[in-house]
View 1: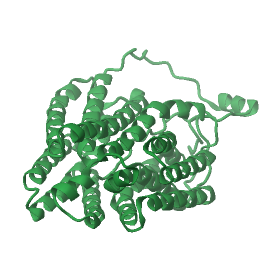
View 2: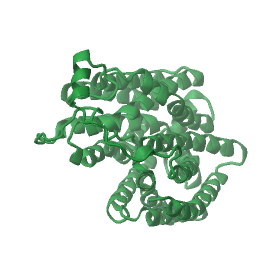
View 3: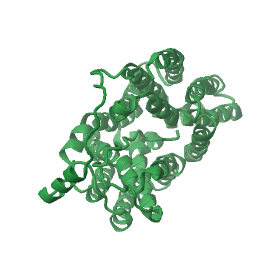
Length: 429
């Protein structure tokens, strides 16, 4: 899967960070943004690594593959439940030091996963990682935007979140290969070491930024108040934003799509080994091919379908469902199944960026931050809910029903996407 992380962009309020109006733009902060992208790469790799090592972890812990898949649910639901409160509690802390601290906590989480004597201990380690991951994503999008002038925000954010795509193209497949070669516990230890290296790189190369919520001295507050222009009178804003209904519908579509995807993708390693009959050593190369295809989907989302996200969503969901259908029906014919698998990666790579593009185009400027927060919650709840549903199906009906559930859920999402066009068109300009 190609990953485009749901991010909360900063508001256009001049008080939100540094005011760069009238300043000549300095050199583009490539080094700092690459350091931030590296942190994103490590965070996403840490979240999704159990999907590639699921059979190995199952044998090592003496639990079912479904229980190992639920580690993704524990992680994702922790993000949903704690990210907002943790972001509020840490709102006055320096962003630079906070990102370094979060990476260190993620490293500790991976060490706890590696040394887990039992399943319950590992769940505790994943919950700790989920808390750090949620706080990380609450900060990282706005941090990238504060590093550059307003006209360069899109470029900065794109560079930063590219680390998530690279995590699926390189991070998860390479960590999976390391796990098969050296053992899954050592794979998590190596990832923890890279987290510490990433924390060092962020500390050294990522420039500090001002942020909304930071404490100001009385003199700074007085100066800002004196410099602020008087508010121009205007019409009173309506209590309820007319675009909220469409935002909620698009967030439901996002959550439903993620539920469908992670119902199957969480358990892709046992599907490839047990159903397709590939050797365990082939899982990492296949995940690499899937990730490369997903990166191609991301490029298509930004070029061909960026101006027409509705069309891209219909095609992406339709081709994803069709590809998984072919994959399930022709599982015994390996060339056909692998082709369908790669096509699935390409098609699904379209969906996360286009879902967020569709949502941000639909939401009015007044509720865009709120819309992003709702989207983020739906996205992560979908990841956790999908892994949970997949575990239930695996334990009761078997692996054969998991792709069937995927197809059915994406079929429902496709119907809602088509219906959403009417809701979005009815919204006032």
